Image (cartoon, rainbow, N blue to C red; front, side):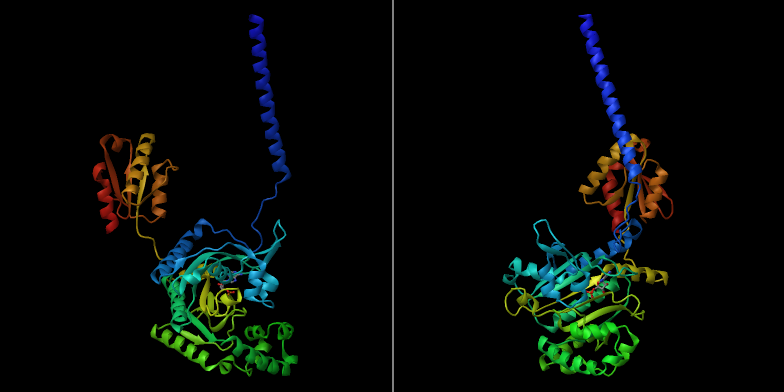
Length: 464
Ligand code: AMP
């Protein structure tokens, strides 16, 4: 028997030694790995993290978007980030910068050509058709938010991944729809503390536009030698884009160019006048901008862009923009005559505008409601706090807490940074006495209350 015991012991020792050496080896391998791959990864050029120091801007933005969408009875929609490339080519159009130069396009593993969405409208129009939304009461009002991708030249306010808040109304051609959309965008910025003005134009029907393009190209050909190289190229590819050229010499040539407004059919003119009348009614400041065309193929009639009021309109570009797209649904295979209208508001530029307004001393961010922080001290209190916190949440009393910070000081500092009005503090003594301390963060005054009355007490504070 004894020798057998010895062998057993030896075997266990061997196993342990082997395990140890394996662990050592794997640690060494890992070390080697990190040595080899010391490179620190950065986000892809033109893509940015949204970091905690900007949380307050983004949360205010999401809140404003959601509340406005609900107030004007828009329903939420979310479409895939990747769609068939042809969807964007057919909607946005060949010859546009977005399709020709800016799309992230690749073959998936089955060899299908797919693209990451550069805007929302095409995907939402596709979804309207795929989901049979033409059978719902018309018009269908949809809102969305999320990331978009354009292989743009990165600079301030221009990124390769950016976010938008978008609204689309599909299945209605009424000037009040355009005015409502413009109003939502205007209110969105105003709720966040940004005053904007709307640049607006009408580009008429597809037919109006084609007639106008013939006239415009005729005029620009006669001035060809004065145009910039880029505009010369656009003369054949996408002449309307020349209208928003930033080149000084182009601008001079454009001063005498024919204006699209003169080429509108009576129907388009009447429609546009009505939109403007509604905007007057809503007291929305707008500027008629005859050169504004928005550049994408699907637009017709009303087109508009939002700019910071009194801001520099050339450096950073528009905050957001939109327009009518009456033919798109039909063009994508949907039911005939499904007119539509929508906007996309860029949110990175919105954050930049909020920061700029804040620098000027304006109050921009809509504050979350004041709330209460729940702090605990010691292991026993932490366990008890865990339960009380859940009970409060179930009773609909929303307090904030963290179990990962041990010291009371660290918790109070966090409570302070979250701008809470009161902190509930549970220590060892309070657990034994079945009480809890309520601290007024502004005055530092503390009162001790019975744990049984806590929910009611906090509810009263939250009501104030
Ligand atoms: P667009 O459809 O191109 O007029 O874009 C609407 C809004 O989205 C713009 O006014 C910008 O606020 C935003 N936007 C467009 N492209 C970018 C980009 N590359 N980076 C950041 N924001 C963008």
